[in-house]
Image (cartoon, rainbow, N blue to C red):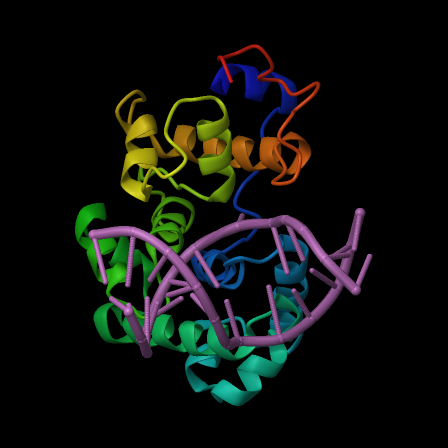
Length: 208
DNA sequence: GACCAGGCACATC
DNA sequence: GATGTGCATGGT
């Protein structure tokens, strides 16, 4: 599946963010939200000079919510960003470089303990911001795997993740590209409301 | 105007 | 432990 997707779509150049902080902010803002809305919010944050650790720590939650408004759920997400910044401050003095020294499993537990960070957001930060070999599972992953009969519809996050980690070498660049390709596939061919994926690169790949 | 988008926490049973 | 609900914008 990876080979076919890569041949069809080519490298996806993920994550669309420059610094580990920007990637982490994007991971929180994109929860249940279209990326184009997140991109607007991030642009606004940049224009307001508010996309640095120091600025995010200093900014009032109310003002932060106004800045990220296009991303939706802005009051909740402002609070979640503040929770994440507080964690980064207390545990690593705001340094992703320090954070990266710790093993992924320990980091994952810490992140999951932060209010507003669930499995997907934690794994996105681990993989895309910290380059740890952790596979990210999202709504597209679930849909693609279940429509191809590789997992049941009610499979939980860990079960979906295991499909990848049990059968692939644990390499961050591979996990990065594969997840990005699945999202691309989902956006182009595997929509929620369109169960048949005519012309999709995985057509006839597995029984559906 | 309905449906959808790269979730998560919390209440309730 | 399973299920339901609030959170909110912008594109199709």
